[in-house]
Image 1 (spheres, rainbow, N blue to C red):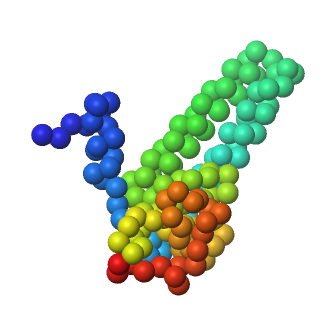
Image 2: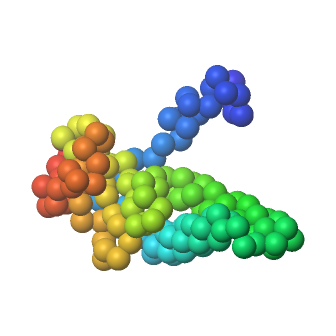
Length: 145
């Protein structure tokens, strides 16, 4: 019996669907991931600009309402893009810089295969707890372990 949508089982369901990538698989997914991440970064910038405009007192009531509606729509677009990335199996770590992690394997344990918008390929990995600052070259990755 599979429970979905139930808060008690939600985390179990997500964990069950988590995808593990080889370096080759992560790199093969980049054409699609690149397009989505470019949209995510653009959406993130638009939301920030709208929030900044909403913070100004010079808006009329109708102007504020229109901008709030546009910002809400853009947030829905952003959420859909993040869901699309999750459907591929990667995790958005920083929407502003377009930072993505894929679960991979190194020496028999889970690690992150790390890619950032503007990079040609997934060429880095890091431990789950170290983050971007702990990136190591993919040449040191031992997927067989």
